[in-house]
Image (cartoon, rainbow, N blue to C red; front, side, top):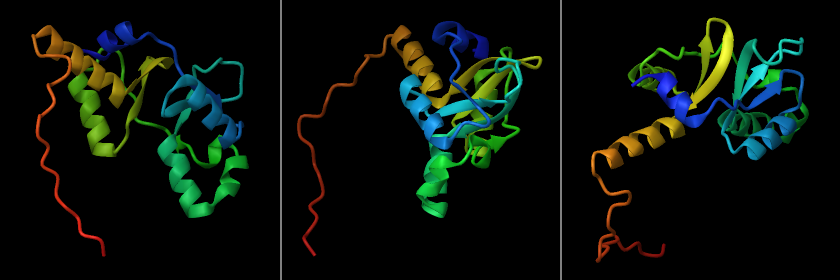
Length: 156
């Protein structure tokens, strides 16, 4: 399976933020787009085709812990991952999974040449895998166990 197959099913809507926007603005956009990361674009008139970075929820949480709430008013450029790992539509899903695993990332911009055409996330890959399992006859949801055996934890 190829990245282009995932984009075809998912669509090519891309969550983006300009490099000079605040981290708070980026978080609001993530919430509105229901995504865990945004592609960061430059401020020139390329309308987002120039990928300069990625900012994720994880980047923000780590910065909050390390630097405190003041980072929310800083520009996205202060936290983003510059020169992110990217893939192209003809890459295999296996290749993208390897990138994610090797580099500890969950979102990979998809470039066709130098043009941004989409983003693939771990969630997209999980959905695609579930679709394939269902197509192979696996149930959508596994039946629940009747008797759960939970460990008992004593109060300390």
